[in-house]
Image (cartoon, rainbow, N blue to C red; front, side, top):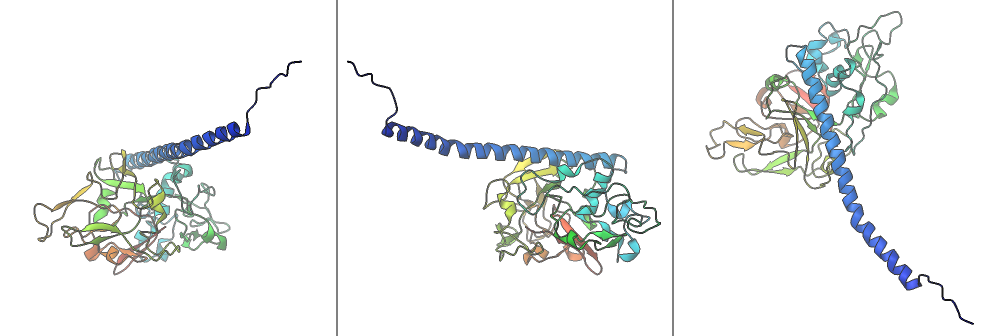
Length: 350
């Protein structure tokens, strides 16, 4: 009687197959991860482009100006200007972009980046009708004529408003994540003219967030290096080497990201001072061969000698008037503005 042999895998063959599958997974997973990262970066660029187009749409009905809360809210229908030292204190990141949301030009969803790694998420509590944070919004018997919701929380450190005055009525508001992932031009002093529809293809206005840099060496030949921070995560302490913004586009040691320009186009760059964004420094120490330099978009450089001013010793506030009033590109998101002898912004760092 013949014995019929059944075909089957031996243990050795099975182990070989498993090893091959594991090897293929090991090869394919990084490729899939990079493809996903690239797709997210492209979506992020689309969102920045949409916001730049939104700024242009707003400007089309406002004499080419991008939204500026101190100008839009001249009659103090949204924020009580009498409670402020200066109406420019209305011009925070949250208030600026809340105007676009209120007018239906952009949605809260595109304010949250698909490459976000920080304490941010899509803001889903936006109040279009009678926002409680605005003047008359949280008072019985009053009718609110608010022009935007001042409680749109852009950064995790936004304090919020109650009845037009700073300070949210709900104590848990401060614990909410931020809802705006991006950095933009602070529209103050010499930089205010760039916060409008200039159609300039080399003038950045909006970008992914970035770390803090210091300049090693003199202005003419200096090299940008990441600030050696202590790793604080309070949001108000400057971060360089420990900034999570370095990892948003995959490289944990160098910044890379999308930058939107005033002609509404967006480009991806692998450095914060790309060759396409240049500045001609006017100081005597800047000779003709090194007068024109790539402009670091995350540093308030001196227009004359390239040396960082406030950022030479990074702190919780950045002064943007007086000797520190410059025209070169500088993009940050910030949760507070203080106007007095000095005009300062308080950037959110992560």
